[in-house]
Image (spheres, one colour):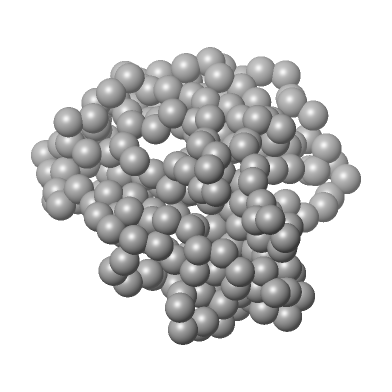
Length: 216
């Protein structure tokens, strides 16, 4: 990762970089030089969070979380484990600071694992399975690798292991109820704001990336 505010870093397995674009920042994410030279497969998630209108022009910010800095917890039998990137689960709270309430949890469940975790009733929530399959909800609907499920009303969600190990992301946030105008990477509330954001980028007001030595 590199950006126009001077931040640079390498996302290692299990790590997180939380960037707030706010009033505008130019950034770039590329495979490391080692991967480009020697090959290999890299899996990653880029999750976008829409800031409310009152925070759209906040100062850009960057937070880097090493794998060891992400709180973890597990059920008593050890069959369900969670890494809490944002929000709170199983009594542990995330280290990242967010502008609005956000849930971002990485769950791993073995066969027979069974856990219910709280999700605020005023949140929109979803799960995305990226390994194996898992049973989601009280009725135990099976969600498989590569599938996303939007959760219905309620203040918790039940997760259960299926055959073998499964992993999913639990994502949730408070809906703003505001209009959305977007074009490419720009997300604003009105068309006029969107045009201004593009002009700010084109004129260099969001800065530029000064290339550094490769992070290996």
